[in-house]
Length: 129
Image (cartoon, rainbow, N blue to C red; front, top):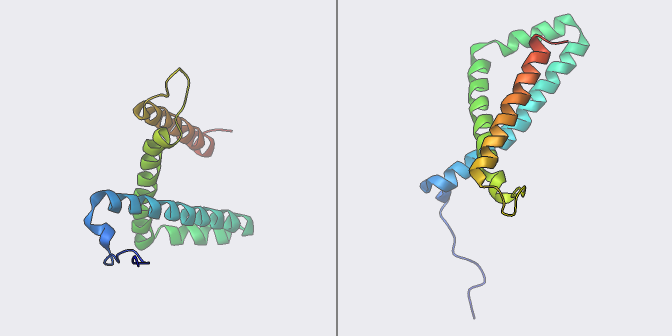
């Protein structure tokens, strides 16, 4: 009778292979992106609660531990975005010609769109309207 369960792996087996480790970091980056979205939603809630609540929340965000945490979050979010852009050209090929576009071209298009949208958001927040 064959073994019903596959061989067990040691805990942390994915730490030994750089590809698996970077995959896990990308997945953690997705979770961090969601958490950071909740922080931004809380910022909007504090803004609607009044100027004192908003200023208090901003003061908390400017403390060194939170700034360092935001720097780590930013690294995870950037890693998640870049690896997602690298993956999307392989997972969902774009057909504008007879053959799908190479993933590197799709990656470049995604990066350009990311910079354009980010620039538009910065413009709307700091200089637009």
